[in-house]
Image (cartoon, rainbow, N blue to C red; front, top):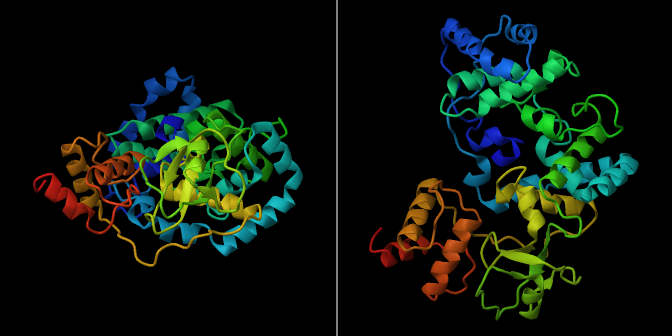
Length: 398
């Protein structure tokens, strides 16, 4: 997501559970902002715009500034999924899809992104506009930029917000969003607004706060620009045969079909490369993911988020719920345990990523490789409750 200039990119660093900044000397805050003038001028921002944006500005003490947890990575995927793909959200999505059917059909044709995905992203980001935030984006970003000197992310976003003001298309009062600076129904950071927000009708500044057509078109533009392939679905739920060997998690759809993997609804599998994803292990639902699934992760780099968005889109379009239920018991590793697992896998030469305590595809591939080497069946890339103990034993105690 950070590579896409930050739709909810701030959440890779922060969370609302973190503490608020202590009361600071406002002169230091103002001196910091004044020190941004050379960078602002280099981006074409006038002195008048610069001064008007920061006139009488104070820190926002309610804005979290400390590094915190990401809820998408700190909960079972199944728990997150059940809350995200709720009956209420599905019903609301269907109602809005019907209300904006004409624009939605045109936007889907224009960008090649399915209608369900467009509406689901709207629902996931702001609950269809009911949770877009009510904070002054300039003030929030200025506070974050001042306190988070370890990253230039918030300075860049603050300057992007000033570029929006400089254009004259939107007033300062319009720049309202979350505490992290994400704006409107699609929760675009200012840099993402500049790059991806579009007017559905091609007139005026994109209004992602009040115009659903602009919101849906902007989401479609972002996903298509991020690499969405109109010829592919995001993926699909599948049924894995009991004798499936789990020799690899990556192959062509055709190879999985030859191995007996079938779509849950009986439809033919698409063409192209696929990744087998068993988020709760071999005992839970199974999915084959296409390249488009990873495009959804450009919005939020979390499997909980991406899979929930994809399945919410399916439900909004009337497709049935999961064929296979989530297991009643699952192992929830702590962040410390996940980091240890990543370190042990690295020691065994199987993992080459960062020790961040977040299990993405790289971690799953490494766990799968360990399971294959250890003859630990099924090699589902998830492992059971004894995974850590088995890794410690194989790696000589870590």
